[in-house]
Length: 326
Image (tube, rainbow, N blue to C red; front, side, top):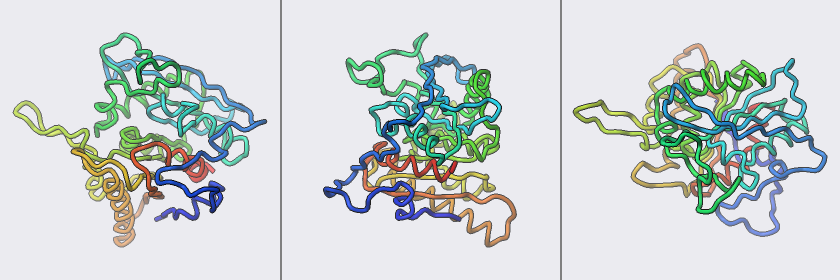
């Protein structure tokens, strides 16, 4: 059982203890690892590429492939998959993951890593709609959510898992090789993208052994009450109970959330994340007490003081990747 104390994380991120000015709640300025640095070899960001799934029919989505600067197919790199790819790669956004990968790989903090950044699907259009986001947006400013995000990300079924592992990843592997070792693969996301990442690893820990969960929506967004025509469909708030009542999967997970996160008809986000941590740690303690052989969850978490935002998660991301891949 591993819990990450905030002081350890600060040391890994090399963040000064004293700031020039007092930090306001929710403010997490990017570290040098999230900003382009001179002399650092830059990987290639290929895309956007359109993809039409057979598993999740009648949807179109985009994805991007990050290829590290020293990619060598004879030495397949680690793999990082991130949901809401349109935001994950945004150079003006708080995640800016391609730049983080450039910097960490160049310093030798993590091995060569290939990235796949995927948008949710969109229905009702032949092609992925341009200008998806604020009115008049262009390019990287168009980071809005496609209309099929909730049915894909907040569902507990294995549909998205099968689409990713059986369709998109083999498509990428036709051109770029990556490791087949789940311990060297990570899947992540923010908000509903985070619960989506957890669901993929929950269904297929043989494919993904690491999960990055930021402001995770372990709430009832996906819940649909029973009717005369169909049974009840559970939501993400079911996961803490499932974790306690199911065999432990060999998963390493980092959870981030803010104490000012959402509280609405779907649930309380921060309490939901605390329930996830409590359930994961209880599962480990119960297995230890009963001397149950096998895997244990490797859990680390960090609570900030922000709201429902990617800012704190982006600030933590370099340290998270060092922990998972370093």
